[in-house]
Structure formats: C-alpha cells, structure tokens
Image (tube, rainbow, N blue to C red; front, top):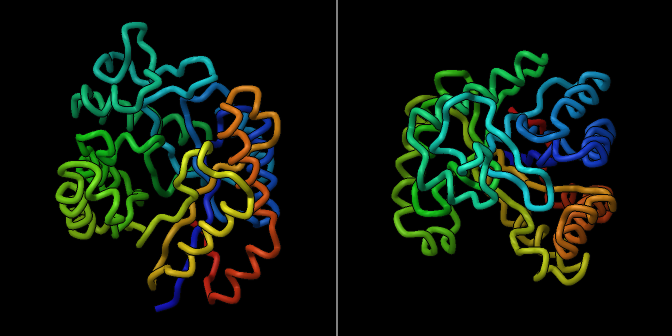
Length: 278
C-alpha cells in the first residue's frame, strides 16, 4: 500500500487575514484540506471566501474552547451550560469543557456546529477537535462519542490509529480509551488517518525555521503505509496582533514550510503522495 498524506491548514475562521491565507494555499494546491471553526468571529468571512473560490468541503473543527488573544467564543446550541463558563462563553482552557461536559451537551453542540456549516452551503466530510478536547488529552476521552456522531452523520474523524508512545504514557487512561475508540470506528466504518504529523513543540521551543522543517520531515519519512495527515496552522504576519510572539512566529514558519520547494521535493523523493481529505 502506498504512503499518502493529507496536508491540512487548521483554524479557518479565526480572522480574515488567516482566512485569506488559507484559501490562497488551497487555490495553489499547497494544502489539500482545511478545517473551519464555526464559532469563530470570522467564520462567515471564511465561508464567503471558500464559496467564491468554489471550495465547499472544509472539515468541521469542533470547538469547545475560546482562543487566547481573541474575544471569547459562544456555543451555537442553546442550553449547553456544562460546556461554558459563568458568562455562557467557551473558556480559554480546553480542559474546562472536557472535564465538565455532559454527553447530551456535547452532542447538541456537535450537531449545531455541523448544521451551521451545512446551512451555509458547506459540505464537510469529516470532523476533528480544536485543542484536542474530544480526544482525552486532559483526562477524559470523548472520542467514542465523537465516533458515534461521525457514524450517524456520515463523517470521517481525525483521530490517529496509532497513538504516539509519549502521549500514551503522559495521560493516564488515554491509551485504553484510544484503543476502544479505534475499534469502535472500525466497527462503524468511520475512516481514520494512520498517524498525525505536526510541529508538536510549543512556539517557545521552536527556535528556527530549520528546526521546524527538520522536525516535520523526520516524522514524514517514518510514515506508515496508508493515509496519514500533516496538521499545520499557517498564519500571516498580522497574527502577531493576537497570538503570543513565539506562537505567531511558529505559525509564520509553518506558512513558509508550505511554500518551501525543498520541503515538497523531500516529500516527492520519499514517495509520499499528497491527497485531499476523504
């Protein structure tokens, strides 16, 4: 089986400049997928730009938390108090919703965000979790519920079949929850990527563009057979207005990576085929 790679630009909707950057990357075929945050302040702007470009298949970037540096985001479903803070807004800490949310509130908000996209003419084929809230990174996995939701609505799910050893050891109970969710996805025929690749280090630990490119390429050279996914967060220089300096710099370097012919040449030499999201 060949090695295939979906290259995804995450976080469409956070601001108009990021939207313009990601849509341009899609048009230039430098990324093969994107994810949209329906609750973000520039989500409608993103939809307009995608529609104008004839692009209607961003995946649903399910979001239960707000973004630091931006006004707080509000859920789309009414009466989902276990997902929000005292103001009725998503908290900055993704762990807030993961640890408190009821299954009913999670399902209501999942459906509200999916319905919002479909009402505006988008046709998402899959979903994933902004800040990892659904995956159990903070101690309580909702991945099984997400798999059931995907099966009910004909969606794929961005959860890796292969969990990194480091992550499995770092979060108690995560490996067992992950294994159960993968088995459930197989039983319900919900498609999953083999592995997820990204520049995982926080921005403060990424000290140069060369370091970032080397880190990502090292992971890509070890890709297994099947379809895997590279997650990027490309942002223009204007993102420095709301992101911490180190994180803004890292995202600008991720944009540089996607435009780097040396990077794309390395993928071709490794025999990795770039494919669209399912």
